Image (cartoon, rainbow, N blue to C red; front, top):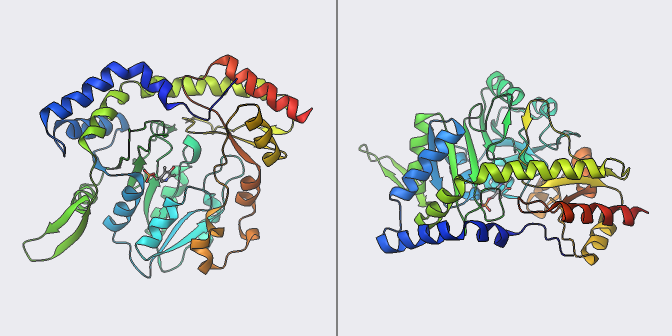
Length: 367
Ligand SMILES: *Cc1c(COP(=O)(O)O)cnc(C)c1O
């Protein structure tokens, strides 16, 4: 049996007629930048996230960079973020020429540990970027109160957590901005690159839309320098179709996770994900911690099961950040997770038979 990590074709097959029509309509209209599809997407995404503005952009990395620029982050500033994430979270801080300041993660939820943040705040600190890792939200109430006490801004990297909720709070409601990626493998994936920023702040929304669209020359000759990072109209049309189904797909993921968790309960070498009280975890990835991770990964691959490691190297130890001179022992929890985490196959179309096969193979490995 083959069990891929994710199966994008299986999803396309289900919605093929609608997707094909949506693409055809864009081609027939000849309207390839902006237009109704992009407007509709921004409006719908705003409504669904219960925020005021959505600024669509070219990808999730640009979304982070533009959000940082909109806050005026620049050389000499420090931005606090988590030790465990995809590289874009921290590389975009470097792109603004500010310095990333890394904080270890919470043992149970893998998101930035709020209790360690205040020790890292200096006169130069301007912002915090928490990441809602794997599909579960960071404790945003704690982050917001730190930001308020120290007059800091907050950008929530929500690339992995559309429609996640924690105690009725969604990404973008307690942070100044939240950024998203619609990279194809994300829970709401385009058929190419795409991303967006959401915010309740009118000024930040205005700045972001200028920065995505060549910048803006003001009357007093002051200019906002901007690049070009827009959501492609074709991708918007595709996302508009997928928005109708994404909630069902997330519910199916949650159902599969329950099955996995139940079957893995008695496998002592595996730790299944913990969910915060009052949290809707949307499972962009289903990450377990396991003994003998690398050998297990290889064993599963030989059995036709693809898994992944999110992420093989914690951010502070990546070469790009070697100038910060971090040692592995500076981030003990993140380092331990780096050695133990394994992402098992998860997607809406996964079957119970496949899940049982994966778990049986894991059991066989440990026996
Ligand atoms: C995917 C991802 C990004 C980057 O998104 P792209 O659209 O690939 O640029 C940023 N942060 C996190 C946490 C991600 O998972």
